[in-house]
Amino acid sequence: MALTYREAYQVPFYESDVNQNMKLPQLLSLALQISGKHSLKLGVSDDVIFNKYNLVWIITEYDIEIDRLPKYAETIEIETEAIAYNKLFCYRDFRIFGQDGQQIMTIHSTFVLMDFDTRKVHTVVDDIVKVYECEKIKKIIRGPRYSQLDNPTETLYHVRFFDLDMNGHVNNSKYLEWMYESLEYDFLLCHVPKKIQLKYIKEVAPTSQVSSRLVTTALHSQHEIVVEGHIHAQATIEWRERDDAR
Amino acid sequence: MALTYREAYQVPFYESDVNQNMKLPQLLSLALQISGKHSLKLGVSDDVIFNKYNLVWIITEYDIEIDRLPKYAETIEIETEAIAYNKLFCYRDFRIFGQDGQQIMTIHSTFVLMDFDTRKVHTVVDDIVKVYECEKIKKIIRGPRYSQLDNPTETLYHVRFFDLDMNGHVNNSKYLEWMYESLEYDFLLCHVPKKIQLKYIKEVAPTSQVSSRLVTTALHSQHEIVVEGHIHAQATIEWRERDDAR
Image 1 (cartoon, rainbow over the protein chains, first blue to last red):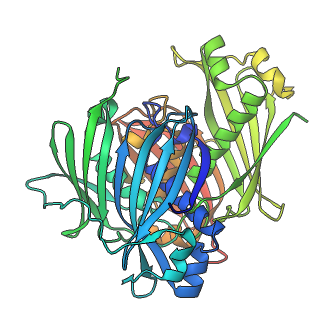
Image 2 (cartoon, chains in turn orange, blue; image 1 turned 135 degrees about the horizontal axis):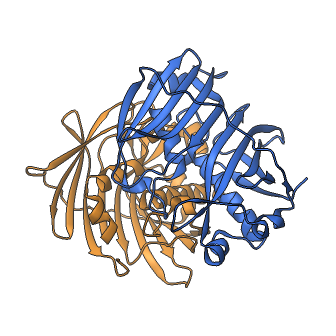
């Protein structure tokens, strides 16, 4: 088993939704922040790998299993572990524990290293990842195959100034927000996600016009984020009715 | 001088904008969270006043002075103090200190107590505010008079599920985001706010269609948030060119 890193976090009011659940885009941002702290502690912070190698970490896929979401004011624990890597991909898990110590979520994530200037994927640098004491594997862990959506509904979004992060592109967490928002308010009020698979394909630039495409069947939704005819992200979400629904 | 409460906070990646400044809507949310902790420490948490009096705190006005915004990864200190109150209004200041100890921002805020069921303003309850050891005054501190905007430009927003907070209305911080987003991307890239005056008039309900109205003159912008012809918030912002603009 590789080294793990763990932090406690109390869910603030402003990261809680109308159902008193933590907003999932916020939780993904927080998880990334915690993986950043893990790296910092091991001497391979984002600054170090940028200055030494001109590389940046990019998330390419999420596979998220949700028993329940963290609640408002709950003190959760987030544990992260760099599970394994191969020539191109690094696999990192996040385990979320509720205040009672029970594991409530698992976030499997796939990262690649990108050259900052060419914006191309770079092979994994052993010197960067060896500090996590994780296993080098040959296998490529593949997410689902996403087929192109047939006759989707479309909701349009204009990229906002505050959607961008310091890299000058739309922050990862916003894609999920656009996917959520394509669903009806009444549906979101009464359902919570059970499993989310999300693949990032291409960055979204400032001032873009974004189309959030959607196909739904009962408790399953399929999503595409499209800019100028090109797919920038794909996802499928399995939903369940809220236990505590009004 | 009344009791003060102070907390340190390190600005995370996901709350930093493309210019490496902390996103101001996030900072307002954080400040509110810290005033909540101040109240909790003094035994008059939101839960207590809701359970005992059926009252909730509502922000009605901000007056924000900004020397500079907090930067990415900077550890700031936020100090809050309930300055004074009269029959209807409570005045609370937040002072933001940079990592070098210099004060970089002041947020003057006005709160009222609202009856949760009638949604009407309630007179200030002495038993709630006495613990802050702040002065009772006769004077009403008034913000600027906002005149109705003449021939504004309009940008339309649909209220999102994640814009709402646990009260079932749009979170305060979102109004400022809609105001910002009515300005051009290139303007926001090269300017930072110097002074913001913002008045909340009416809550915004789920699924509303919101119009963000704007009139600008050089380094000054005037804003209205309008829903179905009614003004829900008004603001004026003074801007300055970024010292570190590219």
